[in-house]
Length: 290
Length: 278
Image (tube, rainbow over all chains, first blue to last red):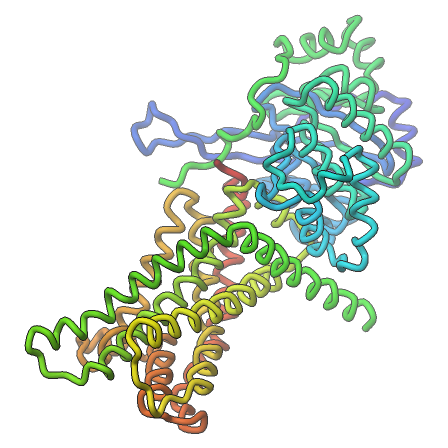
């Protein structure tokens, strides 16, 4: 089991909060190619190794980790896209495996890739996606323009195909798509990776606004140390599938006797923190169909 | 009760969302669809011309009847191709565009998700099949169909579509299991289904073991019913021999298709295949 070091003060706070997410000993393994064992050889790679943590309602928690540390696997497990090999995760009292449909009503996410039908416009993409959450055309007629305006998306580009938009613009539409369904748990999987500095700041500002104005719990997986420090109340360090620590950034720095979060990360993992790299850090986790 | 009504409403709205999405996509890719339709017309013509070729080489046959028989086979082939294509795209296209994770984490039940996909496929496929039949029968060949009963033929095609959708659901799981080759395997299934169903010939010419498979293929009854309506002028009441097996196969194939798809989805979630590529 991975021991999670939570600061006593935060434990006290957590007791008073409604629990939004409770992960207990979460484990996920994948079979990956192993060339040493021949053409069809495979080995087991542990993506999450007994991860346990609790998120309080309304809390924003950032998870820092290198490529392949298990961040995306964690997000996929919580969004019911993966089945765990061990342990459990409960979101507002609903188990992600046995009560997946109830979980899906509560959760939405923004991933590193905006992921839209590229030939369709932002309004069309948001329109059909909101129907999956039971929202009729009448429900979204005013809501979609309103949300797009709030994320700073230009009114005159709403009918343009997504393929004509910059990555920053697409990511704003992705944020709008997530917010449209009023999720009580928002999973942000490297939402600013690969964005230009201006778009990055705009997306971060919007995440701040969600924190302030919405009753959403946010789990932010990121490469960006400054982003984690400024946006999150607690910061977790995930390394090789193990959650090494989860506490306020200042407590982390104090614990490891470091002046910066980067140094704290190095002390915790024994490895230097990589800047943005491979955007989809767990592509290799997919098992190979042989 | 109120919660049930609310859930049912949300499910129907969700299925409508799938139809809405496919409408937008069809609109955006309409010129590609026109090009694909021209290919289908060319393909159909090559098959129908076989009857003329046999006559020209001295064969003794009722050319008009043979051409109509072949045309019906080619149109049903094309129709089935469209249905399977839409169902297969449930996974394949979403994986390519990267939306697959967002769709599969939405609270829409898989049954209504696939139903939405099926409803659009049937509507689009029927429109396309009707147009294909009209273009080939009347524009190119001026085929005589003095006794043709088009409405019963249309009803048979609609009823058979339920079974086709059920089989399509089973096929659509293939890209989920194998992102690389799953879609191509769907075409294999389409061809296999039609070869045992008498697509261009009577089932009676097939080996006995294939004739047995033909009895459980919905395409057999669809082809028989449509040919009886168009060539023999049979009305809807005379179609009962084709309609009841189609209904039974439909009732069995839809739940079976959902079950197979749910197993495939579980497998994909277990092994991390429910994610984007491309």
